[in-house]
Image 1 (cartoon, one colour):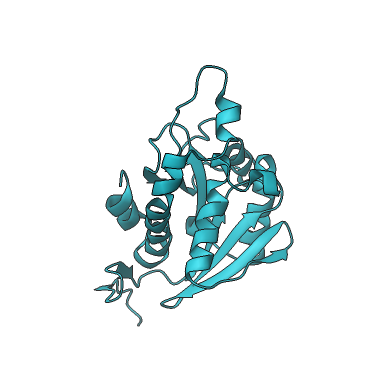
Image 2: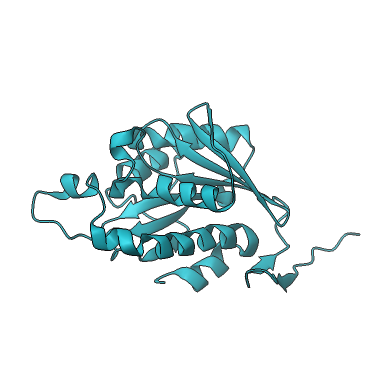
Length: 211
């Protein structure tokens, strides 16, 4: 009789604890954003930016496929499907549902990367469930999946805007000081993605929340 054995071992390359108990080693990592050159460097597109940073770092190429651009990243026996939806932010749920179904990825192996006005610039927060917080992308995913229980990775963009200027701020481009610190914050975001697949959501929350 097979016994379910949970073993943990320390990765020699990046000090991430690798959890070997998960039989499903395929993960869908969704970076939220809007397609089109005018949105490329906006705060609202941080999800795209994180995945682009990972792709460049690991020499990956995105291919335009149904409902989004997709790249495949393999690490230590795990397969990360990186998805940048082409549906625009407000219809992100359609792309997420399609790729979850197509790749037979369980909901617990989904991680959605999004911007968050309620967090200081560059601050990271990973959660396993919660409200959409007024974010249209998360709202559509919640409605499409009919669930609030999916992993989300919020990247802080701060709330440094005057009254009535929220939309302009979110869809505005990064300030010079923010651009200076983005690379280090993006490096940390990539570590979160790797940890999610290798160490599991709970270890990732413990190690990265507030960092």
